[in-house]
Length: 175
Image 1 (tube, rainbow, N blue to C red):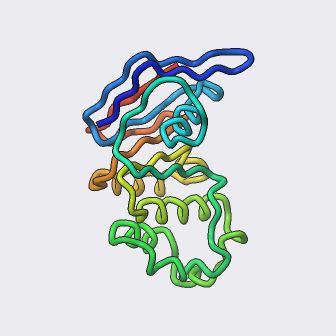
Image 2: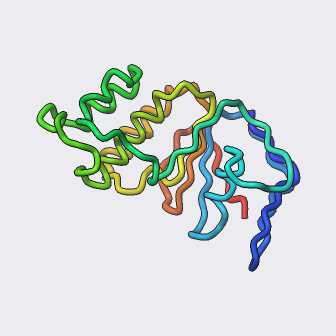
């Protein structure tokens, strides 16, 4: 369950508020235009920035965005870290000949796929994914969304793009 009460984040030019939100679902998408406050709310949920109000959700939490660092070695060294679900995505997304690639030499899309595989394998109860679809092609997006249907973690995804969410999810446009 996620519950947000009296959320307020002030900036010099605007104040973002969310008076009350409660979800019993295990996943939802935050959708809105650039600058709407999606990333700010995710960072508040992860306790990465100060805010007013109260956010209750399953912890521990992992916040993942495109700046999440990746290991220096070959991507095949990540395989032992992956759970069954993430390993299935890895095997779908990466050919065996790509196993020796180094993440920093991979394309944006390949780096994002690696981040998602690692995030899905993390031993956390809530996963906050900031623009996880950025850089992915349609086939990769569909495979990722299909994998989320069996995920047991609480998942929150931000996007400024419209995507077909899992049926059991809510869409929140908070600001």
